[in-house]
Image (tube, rainbow, N blue to C red; front, top):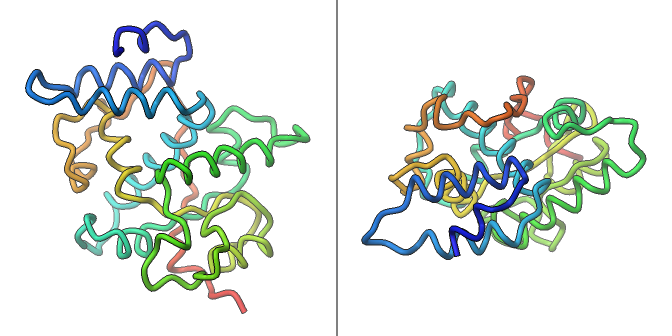
Length: 213
């Protein structure tokens, strides 16, 4: 099954499958289920997943607050991110003027949510939005405020990470250690793709943004 997956010609899918191969062991066949999950995601969805979790890693690496990443509620609250629309579009190699760019990114987010690769309002403890409103989005500041309970400075991506999302990122990076906290041990080389995917620089924690009214 893994060999069949590696025959794909989509760069980011190849990167993830190669990571699964590098991070697998003879004693554990968990990688087989991960390959199945990768197979359910499109190249855009996987690329967005990579962009999100590299941003999570970068923010966590430079943050002074240390907490247990294994706590899903704390993880979602403390590492929820806002990334401006232009940065997300560049990382995904989208022209921001494309009429369907926003809808395609929103659709990709929905796919990640279905796979539990990002946190949703219904899956978060002590969340502001417990009414079933998705706790993520790629939208205007007004619409994002309703979704995540915070007012971003402009249009963009608001998203909160999940444990399964980090685990898939670890697999994709070829990490042998699949504990959630191992994202803090990833090196730049492990997160490098070929061709390179542009890293987002203007990242803000949702927790520091003003509360929505």
